[in-house]
Amino acid sequence: MSIIDIDSLSYKYPNATTKALDNIDFKLTEPGFTAIMGPTGAGKTTFSLTLNGLIPQFYEGTMEGSVHVLGIDTKRYRIQRLVQHVGLVMQDPESQVFGMNVLADVMFGPANLGLSYDEVMARARRALNLVGLVGFDKRPPSDLSGGEKQRLAVASVLAMHPEILVLDEPTSELDPVGREEVYQAVDRLREDGNVTILAIEHSPDEVVSRAENLVVFSEGKMAYVGTPKDIFRNAPQAHDLGIRTPEPAELGWKLYEAGIIEQQQIPLTVDEAFELISPWIIERKDRLAKCDTKPCRCDAEGEKEVILSVQDLSHSYSDEIHALRGVSLDVHKGEFIALVGQNGAGKTTLAKHFNGLLRPTKGRVIVDGKDAAGQAIYDLAKVVGYVFQNPDHQIFSATVWEEAAYGLKVQGITGEKAKERVANVLELVGLSDLLELNPFTLSKGDRQKLAVASILAIEPQVLVIDEPTTGLDARGAEGMMTLIDHLNKLGHTVIIITHDMKLVAEYATRVIAMSRGKVIADCTPAELFSNEAVMENARVKPTSIARLFSRLQELADIPMLITVEDAADFFIELLKS
Image (spheres, rainbow, N blue to C red):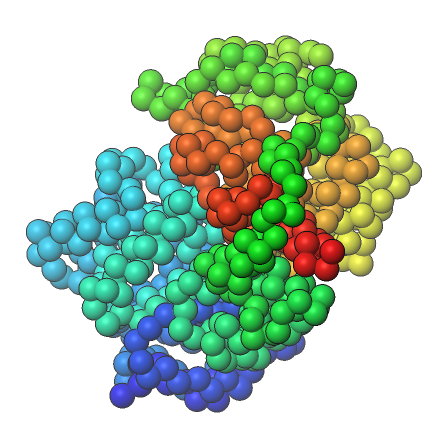
């Protein structure tokens, strides 16, 4: 009996003009880890909803073909039976977290299976331990950070002990260590029994290290079914399919294009890259000149005007929850800063003080030379624009045009001046052809661009963007960061809150690392990735390239490089000189 057997599956949402899934045949006969990748809108999430009967039993639309899981026809059997076999962790944790507190939420599923209280409690405790939420029992989900909510959603499904676990981007809002903890929990599940894992992922690093199989969706079809290594060693094909390759593979492709290695030599992991490259370093050790491993920032801070000044800032949400503890820092005009640290470290709490969304319990925030305490959010927003982690939390107008114009309307700016600004910002973010569409019909990437446009229309000097690429596919993330980088080059001060160290390495000139409400490091990305103690406290992990160079530095005096581009240039020059 096949674990999953899909025959001629097609599905079209109500009122849709095209099929979300188009004539899919798929069979899975052995337990293991199957990764699912592909661009936004390719059909990945829709496919996952067919595996536990939500399509066609809950979501309306037209389904053709058949889906059998463990021999069960998902059309014929009720969802209540199917969820005992297939657990689904959805992309948005808030859509499946609803208990009065954390423990109640995790107990809800197994309690509905008619198990004894002791068994329900044992399952809940084990699931919370697996995802690192021990001690959170009485916390209401509304008090959790986005990453903590995501871990709670995973725990709630793990407590059901499903035979098939479907994960729809289960770690997209987690810090790097939290992401690893969730996947380690999944690994332990696999070790404990024959659990079949299907994970929708944008991160190629998780895929290459765990998945035996890879399925890539494109326009509702399975465009690739095979092993991760075959597609990741072909960068143009991966790019055409809208997926990222691991950093070692990106580096390897550049070396292949330069004629230095063969395609089959392209490394997929840091270990493989080290094995390939270390002989080159050892052979040329005597020729390698010692380089500065702590590069200076592009701009000297003292030469630029301070636009934000945080002075001994503390903030408490309650007597028990102290989110910020004595934070002091200056932000200079034109900087590109990354705020990093574990979920709950205080990053978003700090950023919300910049435009008055939160007020200090103690200390001061000076915005463009004025104390924020004496200014309304209305006035602070003219200087500091804030884009929320979830764009849906700040989008509410009926059309794209109205949403982009709303801030100007509030500021009393109307007429031709408003029209010109709105037209310019929508052109800048690439939404000028979608003016009359309802914002909620846009992809998440386009909704995120619209949120940025609505802030840009006010022409703030500072842009604060919380998790700019969360939930975006490779193309969407690249487009968003290209836009943000362009805005920085136009003169905007940019502050991003992110868990993606690749973004930090490629775009930020300064990193502020936080832990438990305090700033524990203020440095360059290269300095951060060279400091293991800070990374451990901030629960961040270096990029694959930074990890590679850290190991290579043990062999010879070479610079600490942290991006694919810089690494490729270094090796090509080294080998061809």
